[in-house]
Image 1 (cartoon, helix red, strand yellow):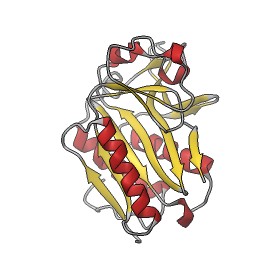
Image 2 (cartoon, one colour):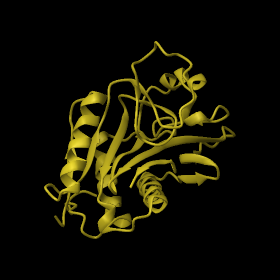
Image 3 (spheres, rainbow, N blue to C red):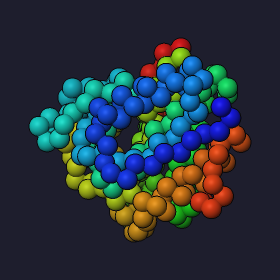
Length: 228
């Protein structure tokens, strides 16, 4: 199993279905019955609560469906216009270092954003990837990270705001941070298609993770709920 498979879902995937699929794939990866996988998809509008979520951060509980997620982190939003990458890698074949893995996910997002002329960065004490919106608007979060580790196989992953309805974030305190804004590529004045974002994600993945990644040459939370 020396190749990483890439899967792209063209239609929105229901959150419970995605979780079930990830758990099944993680079990197969653990038993060396299937290759590692990066799954690119969207969800219908919904909120998820990570292992550190606080009930008071769910401001509008009846606005969208709310799911309890096993990933690390707090409340986040998923919906159309946001690219989600669920990353199922076997850390037994790499460094068994959860912090390093999460930092690599952040680096992957930062490199992907750079391909669109956006300077992403980490903010001390704040999760995800952040950008300066310019024109005195201050910093805002453009990508979230939340992972889970089971038997040293990773799942859940990252979400990158391409062109979601940012008003949908008003139903939660995103990632427990009540004094920061949320942004997207479109909000920054960058029009990018899903295909372009997928190509950039695929291209940059191999720059951060194992050279065993099988990427076609034609395409370009710091928190983790660990279960050793």
